[in-house]
Image 1 (cartoon, helix red, strand yellow):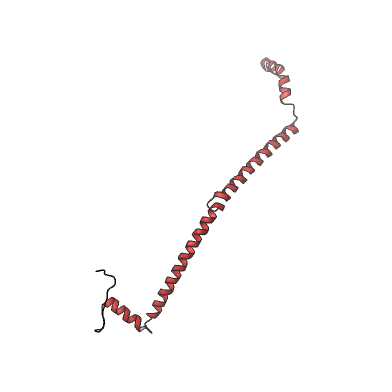
Image 2 (cartoon, rainbow, N blue to C red):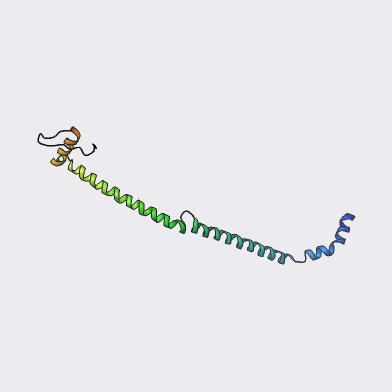
Length: 129
């Protein structure tokens, strides 16, 4: 060994012995404990992030009332569309060529062709004087 290195080691042997006083098993155990601590902190951080998303995320507890209000509005829209569909289905059934409803046929003829009986008066309610 070169003279410089041996002098350095001799001068700092006490310091090195004090610094590395653990044997290899204790060193591995200390490393494992530090690693386990890091993993515990990482797991805690991950759980806190999941908890925050469960609370304030797009499908979290705070958005629950907004989602239920949106669901109520959508159900009302569906009910309105179903009633409109029922009215249109009734009208289509009444226009079936096999058995046309005479009242509906005369109503459509008067409305679309502008026809009327000679003894009828026509009052247009859409126009204002």
